[in-house]
Length: 119
Image (cartoon, rainbow, N blue to C red; front, side, top):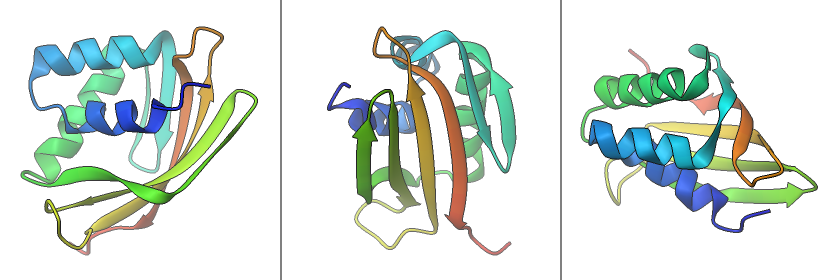
């Protein structure tokens, strides 16, 4: 499994340029990939890119950073992530499980929200 998977995943979620984000999604996810979390259930590159864009719109100026849990075996990885101001306390914390295809790209993401901002 690609050791930079989490770094590339976080970078895709932080990419604010629509064209660069589309390329990052295509490079990281298979064409038929799915993404499911409590707020979204989408398939394909366009759906995943739209979820990322939506998250950026909901939390302008905040950035995703890797959390402390990173573990992988076979074709599965799990990791935590934080969302907050650069260098600041996270307002959201999540836990994602990914299934990786033979070509090293993500086939499926199952996301969980451990900490969410109170509206």
